[in-house]
Length: 187
Image 1 (tube, rainbow, N blue to C red):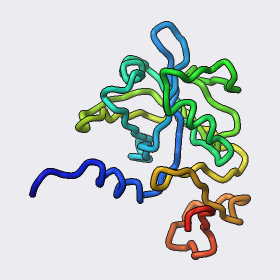
Image 2: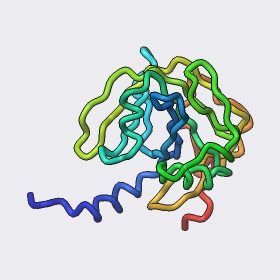
Image 3: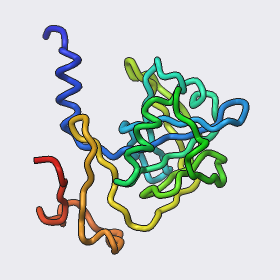
């Protein structure tokens, strides 16, 4: 096998629709910092572990590596501007953003679909990224909102009439029908 075309690979990987989240933590001086990611995933329910990855060249990586806690803000379809702002963390400002904080002390933005508060557990090498793993110490499910989704480098959302009710604990994706999920704007 020859060299992999990284630009082509990026386009192929963009075909996997993901949610969008803003990860937040505190600097050593207790200033809030954040960064937009779509590389967030659950790892385990017992113990409750999640992961996300940051580029090794990201200007906020060191803050996440040194912090004891971080938060995950899973964005709603109404938060494209917030996602864009934290996509360039060096220019992001918390001054005009409504947020609170709880146990972990990290920014929790209002209007999100859900939030997780985590204690950083470990990190591993992931090529040009670092993979950070955290233990969930708290979570907050907000009022039902459609999520912000990234697909092929563009924003969208998925809409399901049943969002207003919580699925039973034993539900699965196998029970969904074609009409349950629609992605407007993506032909």
